[in-house]
Length: 249
Length: 338
Image (cartoon, rainbow over all chains, first blue to last red; front, side):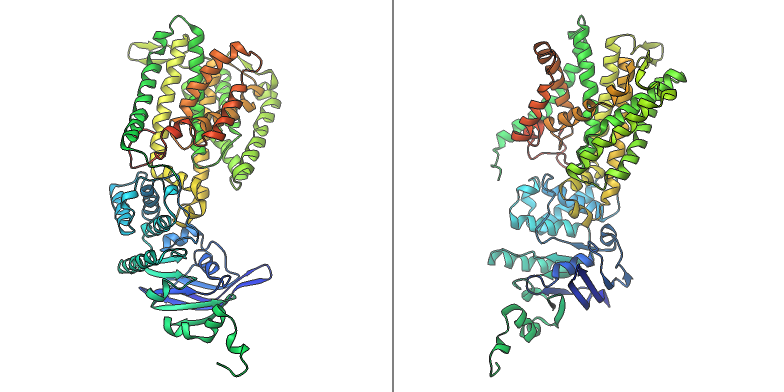
């Protein structure tokens, strides 16, 4: 059964169609990569799913419930969390508090943080490898640490669907490998993942399926190896060599 | 990036964080003993304590990242409400002082309707302009407020009866001093609980990254409004106490820029990301202003505030107390006094 379903979803900014008639669905437990060149509409799609922007037309269904017109905090309550392309830590708060606040507001609200909230926040810091930094102000963490903190904070809200926006951009090969392991462990926790990955370094290794966008349109979807052989996808990433050559490829 | 601190530096910081407030509290409790024969010293410190409560109340909103330049609206509304109810209807100040806070919160709800959609400097300027509304009403509604004539002969701060013991807080300077000190300590406890609660976490998260706060399920505008209402409520109570302390009011005084700007100055100098910073700044800067700069420069002594805020913004953007407590702002986990 599909967890997230997009029906003819479109978004127009001024005269420009950022997304055009996207039909797609994600099943519970899947890892799906969202690929495409700069400006393809990947982050816009995330902003529509999380209701930061409102769709121009089309529908979004999450767990069979229409969410097209929800508010951002309502979407979170239904079970969708995200990380941001440039991470957005609560810089002056401790690393631990960053995760605790996600836990507190993702779950049932209590006036004071329960010790269980703090314990589960610590477990999440353990998971992303930041346990030794729990008292460090989040603003003092390195870029890769801030991305992992973003991930821990999003997980703390106990999402069913987690949207990761460029988690490995700028990472070293070693860090990418660690991220691959981390994403697999997140899936083991029962979380469905939708991953934006411009350079494909993460999504080719972990994704069950890929969705490829170009200029706001869906150009391909399917198993990663198939999508990467797709003419349209190659053209979007590498240019128009096939068409340029008079005798074909 | 910040240098790694050694363990001993950290231990010293922890000790400062504990020792300074405890020492300060003992000094404040015993101050009347030290200053028994000097009314002026008592008056100055009573006023400093009152300004400390104003700074604490201001920072309930400040911690959410909104800089208000309009708190005189709440201060004046609280002062006038309590003064008129006790003066004209003869109600005890024990009842009228909290009612001053309630009316101030009501005014804050109206202000929030118009100003809370704004951020940063736009919010600050809108609140600055908003003060004119209650001020003009108070100034011109002669039948109710006696307009620009002001009010005189307000009843003093209320008395406290504990069994047969009668603690008169209006007749003596010492009594007034302890009344304001008591209110200050109650407010400090409430603010500490608030900042350490999940509500406080939400307000800090909103200050740091509004978009991310919303994405983890925090209803940003609801919490911003709540912090404005609480901040205004306690500012109104402080304003009401001020009226009963000095026992006269006029619109230009209590709605003046002074009471909008001074809590911001104390909060920024002391550390608006901390609980104690704003109050400590009031308790240090106001006496310095009164005892040292006022005799030297009777006309321009307030240049001190202008100078310290420029210095703080340039060299200590997280305030003096924030700097001492660096890396240890309000936290639910560390359990230390901020």
